[in-house]
Length: 539
Image (cartoon, one colour):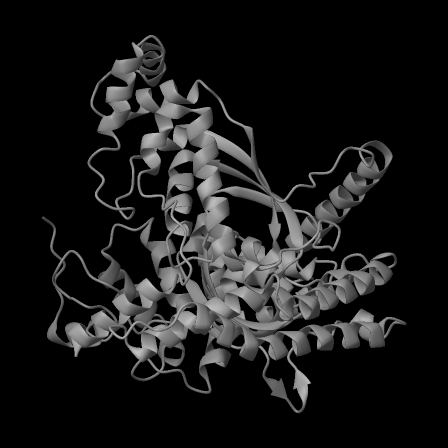
């Protein structure tokens, strides 16, 4: 095996930037993203080892401004941004020289986006590939805090300069007032219904109780409610995200796109340069999306406005293929034979039912828990689900990445979810009054500003969207989202999707063995107890 050899002085330099100077497996460290990305780009077309390449073409190359960018001890200094800009031509030359968009996947950044609306968070999270978002939870944090006497919700600039200003402010404030008002009585009610077991710790019980209360009341929060979002993504992800934000119709998205570009340009400038509004690629993208969206709206208005809407809350399976059973069977066999996939799938179409069932069972029976990933053969079966559920459910299910999904505008047209815990209590009246007031305000605003009107819609109102998902991804989604700790409403959606597929294609029922179809009143309790036990074990 070819082994790189370094002098003692070179080893001393490399020790700071790699975890091992002699092994053929090592990890980069203390390097800014712009250097890591360019290094790997150059690496793909070099006969040198990565460590040798790092030394010769980066550390010892004056054009890279390596010392200024890397700083001392891996820490940033005041001159690092200037150094990156100074060396920009060098890095762009490397990246452009290979002409491969995948190079943008070789470096990344952690972006924090704070005090944005829940609506904006969904736009950011809608970029599926190359990014990993984590959003502030409505389950563990009370959203009724005030800053300088005001609730934290986004004051949309067009609405704030329109005739709807007071209507918007009063409606959002009323929703937050109701949310805050109902927390104490609902906490007492649930505590009375599910008193603490003496064997359960107070902290675990209180955490589960708080989660239950906030799960019930989150529907009162408007889409304008402020949240925080942390995103790790590669350069390609951020380029696409910034293009979408900058060309969005809503002012908030444009502002986030502008400021995110400014900050990311300090760390991964080479990867996001094509999302600069002055860049020809961005301008071409904007022209394409604006033209397409305009023509689609016009076509819809002229041709499909009279079609029946999906109006019943729940989920329906609208597309699947009976032949997918044979396709999955053939794909399961593929890696164990030398036969063609076409021939294997045709073979499975002609298998007796019991033999095909035995084959599928091989792919399912040895799984011991939901974290055991099924073989990729399951990706040969696809399903389309149409869903009408509250915006809170959408926020939870939307985070699954390996599927195709699209939503319609958030509105008050499809009714709303009422938590069963408050039905028949005095709290129900306050809840319905808040929903009714929001619906009325939405109706007035949406006549003129349908997209801006989304900000006033409470999370309890239903939103219409669809999933196009393969069986493997669906298995993960249903088994994860049906667990006892999950929110009641999205648990029901996950359970129903598994049930519908099992009814449509019974041989696939075996792949949903860890879907939890039980109901739980204080769902987070078990998870909180287990968390406490883990902490005790560590201490």
